[in-house]
Length: 617
Image (cartoon, rainbow, N blue to C red; front, side, top):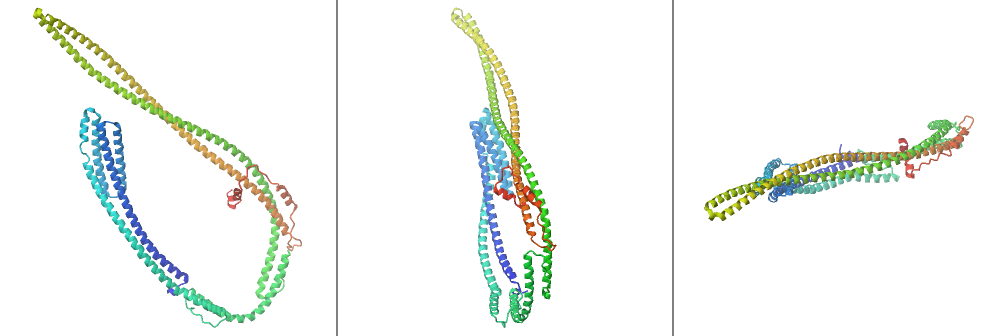
């Protein structure tokens, strides 16, 4: 099939699909370029993130080393805490680095780096252990001055070098992708515009120009020129169809003159048919359903006569059925109205019960919330008690350590007293030797003998005082031991108190959690009851609407019966009049039932009267 013979919608579709394919290809090319740009940009951002993570690792390593060095010099516990925090941050930064990098070699370098970090951590822990002991603090300070980050800096240098190369590569890829996208946009746009212009020219040549020519021929034919030649009838598209139609119009105009004569005869037959139908319809308008057509019609109108008579017979049957059905509907509508009133009373009782239940549930909810709040406050007090007991244990530990140090100092004093005792003993020996020598000297050594006696007496007194000091020191050590034992008992009591307070804390936490859960459950029950209350009120409104609809239906059915009784259905009598019981039912249900339940807003009542809401109810 050549393009000229294609239907116009297909030609337009081909042109549209061609343009869509061209611009889809351009869009796909541009989208691919933009995806490449986006991927390159993401790689660049990822490389920057990995580099930042590597920097975080190195910064936290330096922070950890600095904290340990500060602890070695100053021996303040807060520096150890800073070191532990920095060590945790090193692990977090390493995990971030491993998650962000996509280069296996970098992950291997990270493993090497973390091995070096573990080695450094061992050295730093050793330094901290040495610094805790005053005897080895000097050794720790010497180790603190040694360079320990050589291997770490080497591996970090390799990582930074690879990341710098990665960033440079991703920047080049992003620039190349942006240039490719710009080129694709310019070339694709130019090609698309050229194809659009070409398709527009082809559509104008094959569709618009032939249609203009055909419009001119149709104008001439409408002006009464029946001898025109119609070109394009050989085409297989819509233009060819238009040409064939114009040719048919031309032939029809020629045949019209021949048909005018035959039309006069047909008009006379049609006038007779119209007259008979007019008479029959006039009788039908007056309520006479027995006025059938009995005169003869031409063969072309025999079916019309039969259809009219059949329709009249069907209408007689329908009116009779309507009258009989109206009586049944009146009875049913009265029963529906009575049932609706009973349902409204029961709905009112349900609404009152639900309202009382909702108030009781609300009070329960308030009390449970107050209980949960009190349990939370008690839990806070228990936390404070736990903290106080912990502080007491810390003070007890410090007291034990202080008394232990005093005991150690007492042992040193005992050594000093023992030394003094030995010195006093040696002094007495020397005094005795001096007295012996003074006796040998005779009168010349008398004064020296007196001095020797005084020295001997002084030495004996020193021995006595040393003994008293030793006894006092022994008593002091005994008291210190007893005090240490009592402080340890206090610490044990604090441990027991801490355990009991922890158990109380857990029990209070469970109580608070249970109260909150009960409060949430009661709140849900209150919401459910409120929803049920609203549904009950909606049901009451719907019942009232049902009762009103039943009363209206009864009234409408009575009117329908009165109107149907005006027709003559050929049984010798007109359609039966409505019976008296219908009016009685209407009088019985007319007052209706007035519910004390608070009415819904107008919008809610309108929504409840919709078909879908009634079906749901």
